[in-house]
Length: 287
Image: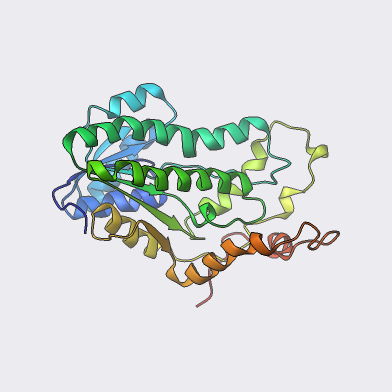
């Protein structure tokens, strides 16, 4: 297991979803939690929620893309960093506008890495620390219309795996948590981002008003448990995919590109594309 003496945790993107619940549960376990949110408007709301739940949280405004916010975080004495902040940009790889592509990578890759650089060096000086990257199953596989998001999570996978090698001699633990399709609203919001695109709709290959996230989604409880346990040092695996029921499928799909030919299915719609036309938003996995 990980170092049990690490107690001060910074969770980014703690205003909603996985980060919110992990911050609450770590605080319930007695960790000294700094719950970071992107904008000032989220600060007081999260404080109210913590009070309602009866937990003590330190809430800070931390936009990972803001250099000033990142510098401020270096004064917090972070021992465990949970890189959870992220956004999802939906749409075809040949349709998404440039500014949206850049924003996807700034929030999911560049900002968190720059934040981690400073905190990791503090951990090295102390001779101990833990860094948890909230990646995605999309960092290992892909789905239609999530390619740019998946690309950012593939980048996170590369960074986390390399960082684990680089920091092991300094006693800094590195792990990933890889959620699959969970019903938190994140996946469905990803398929609405096209509404804000500054482009010429007539040039798009697809009508995004007709599409939805192409998979049924699971109850997020499994990720809440796993992310909390990994951050707390109770799980020793580097990669932690949820739900566990998708592990074999995930490994199989990693092999598919080795077998695919460039002419496979030419002239026909891929079944996964068709699923996006047939699926309704917020479809839960049936029991």
